[in-house]
Length: 479
Image (cartoon, rainbow, N blue to C red):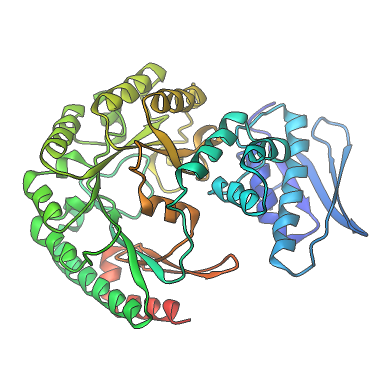
């Protein structure tokens, strides 16, 4: 099958077009709605009594073919469950047909969402026993046994941490600044040298926004469960700017994380500052332990810089430390990635997050049409086996669009070192009030309803429209 083949796709229920198109793109990544393809796929969903029927017609092989799938369907039209399960039926039926036609096998089967753990939780909450969840995921959604096993492990690792609390809110603060921009990055982040003149004002306004949010939540008898300062690289700020933000953070939360991902931003002075403000967790992110790969992605530090920053932190402070790694980077190969995993395990950080490279819109790699699929499955499988054999447990997982190999990002931890914020965020179980440019607040209302309110993305725009950002928070949390 030529990867350049693209279909013209139609379905008779417009409300589920976007979701079924996600399945089309799993098999034909260049598919675009509204363009004339090399062949057609038409899917018609009909109802008869308590049955829902999918009929798929296509001329993929040069001859017209028809496939029919039928399932019992007892959901009331207009309900949230009706639309959810209709989408699921249509996607599964389409997936089975395209798998048969193309011979392409995908590790996550017909699951296209960001949070496959939600599917596992749904099965668990419906009363299905844990030892049956894996088999259902494999049978109904064609998920590989290795992936369904990870989901089951994650549910167990989240026991006692995962919660739904309508009075709890996580505070997220965004500092969209880095010393350089990586070739895979699409985040709205600014290189330090390009925005340095704005950062005094930015840090002052962010501190004001945090104070406003805390007062807003207090007026509603809500409390801050965890704090996460991310980006970007928050430690790109200078001491005074960083202190201005840290000084207004509440001190009695379950967890306080600051991303210090770039080792070239980590100094003893900044680590002392973080410790003095009761920060409990930080990230030091190698991404790779290959200097060749670091140079290829646009990093200006070396692997030795990572080791020195890690040792400085580990030997002198009490922080829980996370390290991020990425599979599939330019100039990397299987042996190089194995070396990265092994060197990380020698350091033995409390958390290791293994990302699969995602080709994000707006990134340099996406513009270059980068597509390194060489042994990407083997890299991710090796990481899982080697890390879990070393005493770590997978405790959260999420997926993104355009990930190499249609794979996943997985967070691993040593015993009792789970990041609460990561679990809350990935499971969308706790509301988030978010400050700073590009930050997105989320308010959970129960029954699956989530309302979102984004801040503007760019630092200069955030500064000029600051009052509007405050009003957006007030409007969201006073609905």
